[in-house]
Image (cartoon, rainbow, N blue to C red):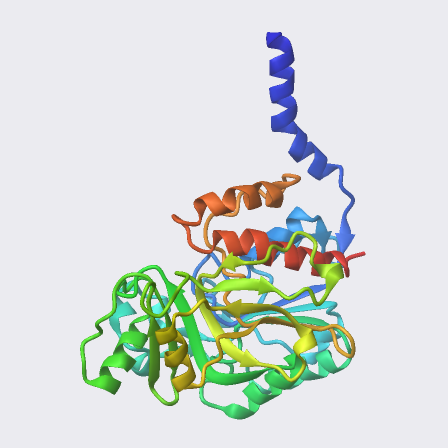
Amino acid sequence: MKKLLLLLLLVLIAGPPVAWKLQDDRKLAVTIVDASVRDEERSEHAGLVWLTEQMRVRKTSGSPLHLNDYYGFHPHADSEVTRLDTPVLDKTEFLYLADARGVWRSGLEAFEMMRSSDRDELLHSGFTDAEIRAIDEYARDGRLVLGEGLLFYATHGGDNGRKKLEEVFGVTWTGWVGGWFKNLNNVNELPFWVRGLYERRTQRIWPFAGPGVIFIHPERGEFVVLTPGVELRSPRPELVVNRRAQALEDGVESNIPLWGWFEVVETESPEQVFASIRLELTGAGEKALDDAGIPHSFPAVVGQWIERDTWYLAADLGHVPTWLGPAQVRWMPEIRAILAPYLESQVPGEHAFWRFYIPLLRNIIDSRAY
């Protein structure tokens, strides 16, 4: 009996890594642009790199994708900046635009975190006009491109680049950004510039604490803050799948609590809204959003899969919330998805990452890799 139990334990431990090695390699030419890398974690595109390894999806050369395989700011390579161009895109089959916010001096030096970003030094400015034109040409050819949370930071003050990206992805930014935070008074969660903007605008000390949803219109300096039990019936926004692309829904869960930042966007094609962000509001919450012109539900994921092949994630879904675990283990995403709801209270974002983002990205890659 003991030998049988030991054999079973050995199979459970060794089985998943062996099963991973028995999978065939596949190929897909993935190009990553991440304009926000500040440290070795590279958290905005680490999930994609991990998933390609987990799926044994290789570059066309046959080598695996690495965390350093991206275009953008490289903080540990003498602050080198690599830029996307047309020759690179000519060889690309999947373009992944992870972030456009750029890199500020405060992101590299901890003691600078208390400075407001309007007095900060911009080290890397995100996308250039030439890069945006190249992205537009790439998308017009009907090739696969996915972008996440790009519009707020797209050009650091210029509208032309942002409008071009809106055309690429079939969305329009309303000017509002929002987010759910576990503690609105925690400077490690809520960026200092948010408090600074509020205090300059209202001439009052930031009064909010505890969990809540905040909406900001940076250009107009307007704020809406929603708190549980006052403006919110449900404590957190939810991701709701709209069942628009059945082939890509496998394993993607609906009604998942959302964490972190999102953009309030619109689209002229409701049939292309794969998932929405929904708020359960009290009467006071409905009035607050109505007065500000903010809809109660708005697109979270927009996919153009007929004339173009583009996906836009208007929420910070790809940000890795915690340690990913070994990629060379078969069924690791499924294991993490089982654990995610139980870890959510300690690690906000686990649920959405493992039960929404990873399955959706896996389905997109799976439909293109060969």
